[in-house]
Length: 168
Ligand code: IDP
Ligand code: MG
Image 1 (tube, helix red, strand yellow):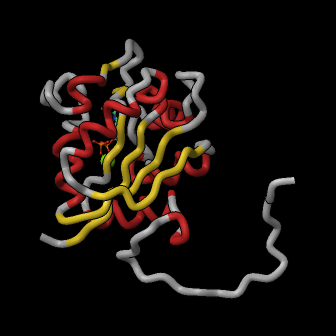
Image 2 (spheres, helix red, strand yellow):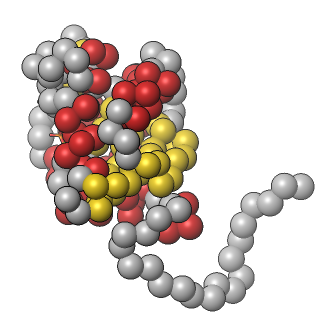
Image 3 (cartoon, helix red, strand yellow):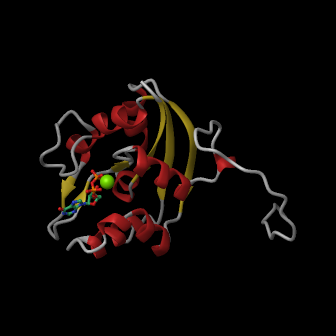
């Protein structure tokens, strides 16, 4: 099996329901390694880019609000990159099907997801579905410096006059 990386997001409902520990514990069953992790405030631009392939779906606008945390008073998600053999498939399996009512009850989405009265699938987590999606998503959510292993090529450049925050 090939060494892969896959993007996991603990969505705002997962954070609000204090599921971070449970989800990470379930994912540790895969024996994959975490190559990066960050708490991210999701802008509209990031949300739309992440779900670009779903533009045009009837639930798109609600989905953007959902991932931005507008329904959960948590304007953030936890983003992680899992690294190892067959990472994409292994994480998708524990994650479970998109529709939480149809997901295996022993999967994360089956155990913790729900469909809201307005029809949004609140399914606690995101997991990349295939290698192309994983590459696109990891590059969207992480810079190379935020990952301890690289499976995609990186390049080095000297930057001048970059504004950065530091501790005052
Ligand atoms: P995935 O997250 O299992 O890869 P996608 O089809 O990529 O599923 O959809 C992205 C997200 O959009 C889902 O996780 C879910 O939150 C939401 N979603 C997908 N399909 C529907 C739907 O038919 N109704 C409402 N929400 C949906
Ligand atoms: Mg998807």
